[in-house]
Length: 486
Ligand code: ADP
Image (cartoon, rainbow, N blue to C red):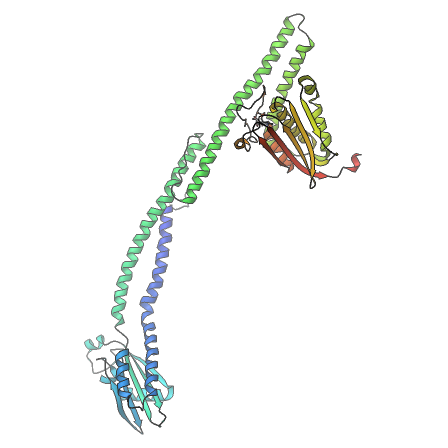
């Protein structure tokens, strides 16, 4: 299932993302630096002129008007003219001329003065922006070099009844040149950043895609059945974690594969032993007179039972894992079920000296599939018998707590090392060197138990102390006895 057609390589992906990121940031910069520079500067300058004009208005009739005008003109880099208006005539009472191309001092026409005066009368504070090349009387070359200006006019009447017209002129600095510089700078910055985005894309994609490509190669090998693979996740945390997870999965697959091979070898061996016995004994019984004894027959029967158990285990597990097993639940006495299971071992108890005890204080009912619960009990008790200690003791307890019935099967055997505890439930798993007696375990019993208990939604587990024995347990909710069954 290949799916590469619609996907673009990681490198191009990262580059495109970074390029978009760079372009968005630069567009914002360009917008403010190039397009908004002049309007923003003009607005700041106008605000400054209004403050200067207000300061002059407050002291217009004072003696210090001229010096105030000069110092404000110097500090703010503007030109100032203040006229006292007497009737129809205007008398210049302060004039500070700082900028050579000031329109007020050099070029203002009568009509402009009139306009400034009348607008000041109506508006209170009047502002006008004048392009450097608007004026007549200047040749075109010079006019181009004159920056745009802001002219303001304000009328004020002082407390002693005198009227003053305050005119201010500020050049909007040669922003054209500034803008050109900024444009060039931004052009260079754009180029550098795009180059940087390209290099970053190569480095980042290298760090991400190299291990992914390596891992996908290893994964193909794994899929072909080579378990000797190594997923190197590189230096990116998430990919390194993916690599670790895949290494773990490969390890598990390899273990399962080994186990499966071992199981096949074991099963073949386990099948052959009883078959050899059966065929041997039958031939002896056929050929040698007097060998047709009950003991020999019993051996054949026992070996057949071993074979049946083994084949049954394998069949059960394959059915359970194929999830084709449906539960056929009913209300049943778990106490009775345990007792029934133990009856199967009565012969063993008598013949081989096993001491199997069952302690309970009352009969408890659960809702479960009887044949499956029997299977669970049979497997757990069987294991306990197989692995218990020299004293041959196995104890089964039925407990009741918080509405849960708990069955515990305890043996006095070698126990199971802590690191193996979680694995024994896996299919085919066998703890090495722990078989006390000639146990023909298939490694399937606990896996069957686990599957059945999971199907029932039961809780289960094992506690074990090496040298002292193990306790396997499971618990299911208690239910009321089915009245119709009485
Ligand atoms: P087997 O058929 O080999 O007993 P199981 O699935 O029943 O397979 O058990 C898996 C492994 O768990 C066993 O091989 C054994 O090593 C260990 N085991 C199970 N029950 C016990 C127990 N009561 N005491 C010690 N080890 C046990």
